[in-house]
Each structure stands twice: as structure tokens, then as C-alpha cells.
Image 1 (cartoon, rainbow, N blue to C red):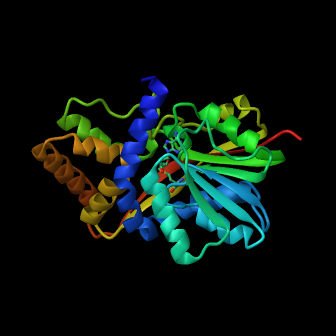
Image 2: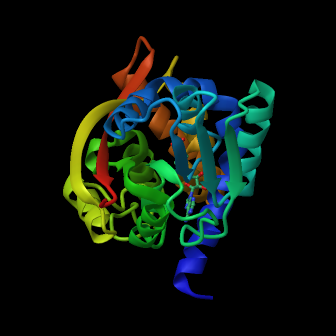
Amino acid sequence: MDKARDIREKQRAEWGSVAPGWQRNREKMIGPTSIITEKMLSLARVRGGHRVLDLACGVGDPAFTVAGLVGPEGYVLGLDLSQDMVEAAQELSSREGAGNAEFRIIASELDLGVPGESFDVATCRLGLMFMPDPVGALRELRAALKPGGRVVASVWGAPERNPNFSLPMEIISRHTDLPPQGVDAPGLFAIPTPEGLGALLREAGFVDVEASAFETPVVKAKNAESYWQGVSSVAGPLVSILASLSEEQRRAVREEVVEIIDGEFPEGPVEIYGEAVVAVGSKPL
Ligand SMILES: C[S@@+](CC[C@H](N)C(=O)[O-])C[C@H]1O[C@@H](n2cnc3c(N)ncnc32)[C@H](O)[C@@H]1O
């Protein structure tokens, strides 16, 4: 098996296993992450009537927000590797009657199965860093965009600025011999700077690229215990590592995370901020 295929397989399994957690926690996650969505959609200047392609759509955020913005004359197509994520988005779409939103499974970020030059905007929220070929994915998005169309992508910043994910990972590495998640392989922190994300967009042929980092709420929970419940059921990479631990290691990790978070937010609620990175670029005319 080639390496890229292995990575996609691993991503598909990791995100598939947390799709039910994403469905259950969707409302709780929309609040904190809406700042990232607003920034992305305003940079991409999404408006009524636009056709938008959302890569790594998960259970449908930001695609459903986009569907509201583009209105009945517009259209949004969400694509993702994970069948479970896509089915959750489809189910939500039919429940909410979002007639202008569609969701499809793809086998790879390098084969989007969409006609060329047919979208006004392409979005990818918190997905690019998990892909084995992010530049290839951006090239695919460029091919799908009309000339002058815009791409906007967001990723997480450096681990030390994202304690929501890095704290549990650090504690796991203390209780096991697993290395902490690095920035050198596809994963949460693979594209941790505006310079890095901007360079990927340029390499993929986008122009007028602007990239920046900003602080944003990442998670809100009523107390340390419910913080752990949430993070350990939605953070794909963390969940798969936890699943590989012994019962005893899992309990030790949970207790230590809860104790630290409890110490920081003794009265509750827990509100953890992190750093996101966003970049926008245009397909040349
Ligand atoms: C952190 S979730 C983000 C979901 C959604 N965009 C959001 O912001 O809520 C990451 C998503 O990337 C998808 N993904 C990972 N690797 C991918 C790839 N190579 N191609 C397409 N989607 C991928 C996962 O299946 C998962 O749904």
C-alpha cells in the first residue's frame, strides 16, 4: 500500500469512529467554531447565488452556514473521505430541508469528481492538515473554481497555542511511550503557521494570497468532566490513540486531564481558546 493511501485509510477510520460524537455534539461545537467560519466566509466574500465547494465537510459545518448565505439561488456541495461523516451531513440536510446543499463521499482529495470551473468559492475548514497531499487538494479546488474564484482554508496553529488538543496529547505521551503529535506528518498540527498555509495556496497556483493567525474559542463546556466527555468523543486523532491504550492508561489520562482543567476552571464553565490559521487566495483570471 502506498503511504498516501495508508494516511487516507487512517483518517477515514479515525473520523468515521467519531462521526456519532460529532452528530451528538454538533450544537455545542457550532458556537465556538463559528468565529472561524465567519472569518473564512467573509474573506471568501460568499454571497447569495454563489456555488460553493466545501472539502472535508465533516457533518456539514460550515456547509450549512454557507447554504443559508448563498440562499435558494446558490448551491453548496460538501465532500469528505468519511462515509459516516457524509451520511450524518446528508441526514441533517434532509431533516432540515436544506434543498441547496448536497454531500458526497470521495475516495481521495485528489479526485473530487466535480466539473471544472463550476464553483465561485471553495472552502476547507480544519481539514487540509489531515491530507497526505494538501497542495494536490488545493490544485483540485483550483480546477473546480471559475477564473477569479476564491479558495479559503483554515487549520489549527502550533500545538503550544492549542492546549485543547495538545494538553491531552502531552498527558498521553507521559503515560505511554507514544510520541506527542508532531508537525511533520498529516495531523492536527501539520500546517501550523500562516506562512506555511499561504505557501501551500501559492504552490497550488492561487494568487493574491493572504494568510493570518488569530485567537479563537475552541471549546466551551460546563465543567472539566463534560469537557473531557466532549473532547474524547470528537477529536478523531485523540480518540483513536485513546482506543489503543489499556483501560488503566485511559483512566489515568482522563483523571489527569480532568484534574488540570478543573484546577484552571474551578468554578466552571470551561472555556478554552486556541489559535487558528486562515488563508484566502484567488484563481487567476
Ligand atoms: C476536523 S474534521 C473537520 C470537519 C468540518 N470541515 C468542520 O470544520 O467541522 C476533519 C475532516 O476532514 C476529513 N478528511 C480527512 N482527510 C481527508 C482527505 N484526504 N480528503 C477529504 N476529507 C478528509 C475527515 O473525514 C473529517 O471529516
